[in-house]
Amino acid sequence: MVYSCKYKSPIGDILIASDEIGLTGLWFVGQKYFANTLPNEYITSLNISSKHMADNQLSDEAIPCKNEILTDTKHWLDIYFSGKNPDFTPPLHPVGSAFRQEVWQILLEIPYGKTMTYGEIAKRLEATYGHRKMSAQAVGGAVGHNEISIIIPCHRVVGTSGSLTGYAGGIDKKIALLELEHTDMSHFFVPKKGTTLCSFPQDDGQNQV
Image 1 (cartoon, rainbow, N blue to C red):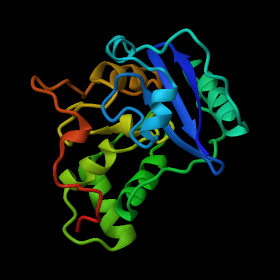
Image 2 (image 1 turned 90 degrees about the vertical axis):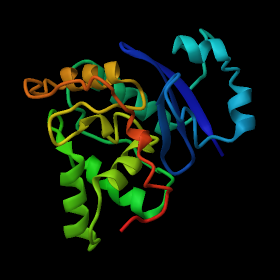
Image 3 (image 1 turned 120 degrees about the horizontal axis):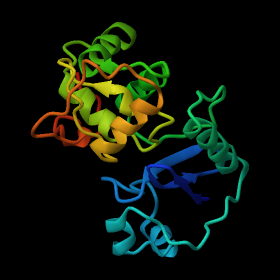
């Protein structure tokens, strides 16, 4: 069973989705891979038009929260966007390969207001899961396919040089989220030719070693 509701954040409308186990998706409207894990017929039932996608906004018609997981997630977002670090995490149920799950688990361990590079994640994978010759590009593919934005904090992943390489929700949102967390931005920069985290071709959803 799929459940969903919308959330109006200070930096853009968000669609939240869950099943009976936990949160399965949290997307900024209009982002790359929007509602990627939801059945096509379910997306159609939400009446999200191409104009809504282009405007990065959902319709004013409410999508009510129909379970406790969604209600908890909205509460988490209320706390987060008030500038505080929530002291709980809603139940999560991300769908993905074993490799992606490993990467997402490391993302959950990045502290509020801190960052980690793709290379550091690759080294953590090697040390924790025994992968050999793990590439930053493979990590980037898995990071970019994270379906639960903000709560699984892929916005905290940066390039080794300090480059704020892209974010599926948009580089402006990545910067806004880092600034909200009072992250030290002094050594970061926006590349002249930005890419999205989803642009790394090496991760096809399988374990990359």
